[in-house]
Image 1 (cartoon, rainbow, N blue to C red):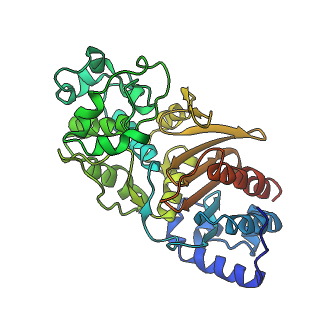
Image 2: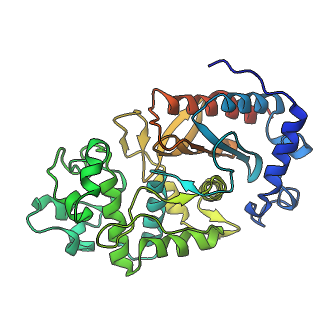
Image 3: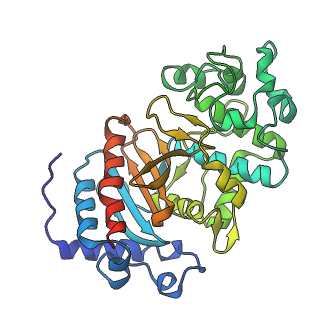
Length: 362
């Protein structure tokens, strides 16, 4: 898509500086003094050192031309270099991040493992929460492991896509998800299903004796300084695992920065280094994009750089490029589909063809 360059580049610099100045509290005190003191704008000395200005401007022009894109936050080595809402809510307002929620729930599972509430990823449903398995379920259901839920390899008929409405219309979302027929053997392949993550969230609630919301607030929100509102609950009171969490683009930036730092925020571990490493090991592959999938993260690479990303319906995206120190957040119109060979593909091209080169050329 050909776009007309936006006028008044000086105005853009002023707006970008104002936007990032408003997010100074995002930066943890462990950053170098020059970065922790104030966020950089693309036009100042720090910004020029971190991203090539000309290439960044091209990236922003490209982003402005994507009519589905709402907001874009770009940071490098902990410094927010651009935080702009092209349309839709401002970057500080909370929005539905859709299935990016799965990546957040996977992080909570890692904390539960670190704290000994789960004995390991090979722990089965029958061991961790047998009361969740409905009567009459296939005997294999009790043997589904935490790892298979994390990688959506449980093998049960999916609740996402055409089956989503029927699933959330059921009287018991956990029982409905676990009572479905197998379409693949457990561990055989990825069957993308929000139901797998909802079951995982219910397991976390059972083993901890606390709601998924309470865990998210305590284990992620409090250390990251993020306010986590309540979100959808099922008829039994379990918060929906894997969809409908509400976070701002700036909230997601903090979450992504923590992961880009190996699970550490402000000098303190939020998730363990072991879990951070384990989560980015490819364990299955998406049947839609073809990209690898670890524990809650899609995994790919471009120009020799490994990329981990979270993805939600409509184009809610969190991209991490550890070798370049990049954290990139995109929020989009949540009512429009975003296919891998369509809008999400365009977002990937924005990252790999514009934003990453701006970091490489700085």
